[in-house]
Length: 98
Image: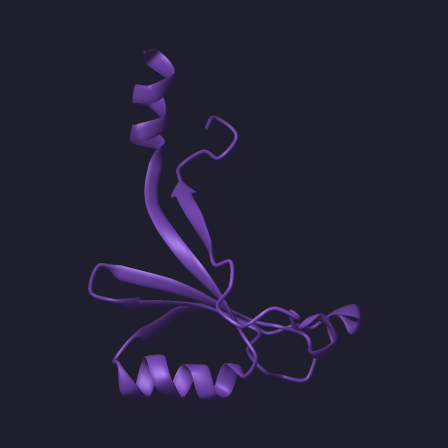
């Protein structure tokens, strides 16, 4: 199967993305406590994204392991128990080819 071999070569990494209610506390846990290093981050700068100078999304790595954290906006916090329904992102060279 050509598609399967192309897909398996294209996908580089599976990465969980955890929604958090407090980015500062989460970074203390993962970075200060567990030793993850922040490799990428996003601080909103558009008015509609509620800019306040705080990190809202980040990519953390520890050895070959990586996770992403994204802070829920207060009005978008889930009603379910936190941790319900985690997502995994597949990192690839060309997402459209996948």
